[in-house]
Length: 117
Image: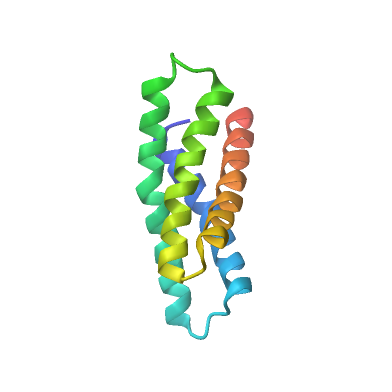
């Protein structure tokens, strides 16, 4: 799978999940808020995906797959969780949970897609 395909898959999975969960946590009062939340979710993924992809390529020969993924995903979840907690004023715990749910779903979707290709 190429980095571009992986990025598109991440965006396709993470943005709807973030929108649904944030709508549940704090209802959108306007279409503008919905667009702003979509932009935030997109921006968070666009920020962290290249970091995760590049990090994986750098340490691919040094660590076994499960260890690599746990380390990389933990860093991604922390960065995105921090962004969500600060921008949405959710508190750090909800921000981390939000990011964790979206990233676990995205990772699982990526594994399924990789197996199908």
